[in-house]
Image (cartoon, rainbow, N blue to C red; front, side, top):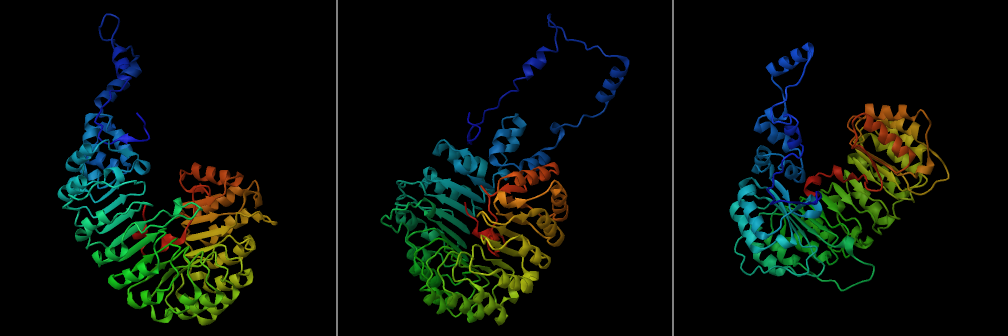
Length: 538
């Protein structure tokens, strides 16, 4: 049995292999029970123990065990089901199966056949099921019929078509879960899905959150023919109540699709088109005019053009959160934005050559940064430390997030000068992976962070380990950070000697999940978006 992936339909119960040896040790060679020999003191203690009640996990009532099991993943719950009959009965309680992922690469759960899944839907999931993830091999019309009939409270669904080479036949599909509020569809590169979508249009008009996830991370350097595998123009007509739309890394999405959604979705609050590189912003003006409720616009890694960007009536919109990172916007377009928009509280404008001192100067002179609470200027090399220091010292007291990473000229000296102002900061990202000609005195930096930023929740130090200088007394600074920043959940450091020192310190204090390495973790300000929970997808 592969303990990494468990067959969800398995009901095997295994006896404890040591139980036979323990029973054998209690009898002699002739089969008579052995009588232990105690001295007087030991015997007295033994009788006292027998008279008193032994408190073991078996004495806990079912509702307490059920509550304990609720903190476990489904993979762990399935392992617990093999302990005994009682634990199996609790593990299969439908209240533990409200949110289910059947993708083995995500949850470790595997369903061997469609018949087994149909039985699980009836017996184990039922009316308590709220969220389900299905891989391509389990997306059939019979499964969807059963979910519609047996799971009336299903409101969240993820359908993963990303590995599909062909679809099942949906010509006989007559029903589909009709109470969905959230739907995430992982698209394939080559499979046309209109045959499936045509069958579900009548059932999804109550959708409020829609995720269409493309194949951005799988695209090779060689350009291939691009297929529009899903008809967005028909989809928008079937989903008039959408509040949040996330189109992530889809190579065929362009400005016409944004225009289509804005023409029909009057409730739109958040639109994300990150890494849709065909988006140029030509319909951005129309989007802002139509979508009066739009508060969040995420356009990271798109092909925005400055002339379209300057046509938008920023002074008449109510936009509060904007991500334009990794675009080619000019300084003039950015100045036009920051001097006209007055409601901006979140701005992510990293990796833009046009972001320079003139933009910060115009922004400060306009006074429009008075609502700003999140600033991300990652890898904005054209900003000098002088103007950056002026801006942070003026508005730092209101910032909950400050991202100043990827800039070699921003060292610990600047951070030491601005940290006293960042008293309300929850997220800080500093440093660069480039090898610097100067050393970073990390002990002083940790001491300043602990003294000034007690509300800190996430911290990342991207400096190369060779540039970090710390003394034998660095444990004192780390202790101060750990004791004062009690809300700290994540601290990301480049792998090296200092990482090992900090990690060991937190582990000794039973906070082993806090310190992580940049190899597998990065800190992002997205956590502070008002629609963050709606934008999460897997």
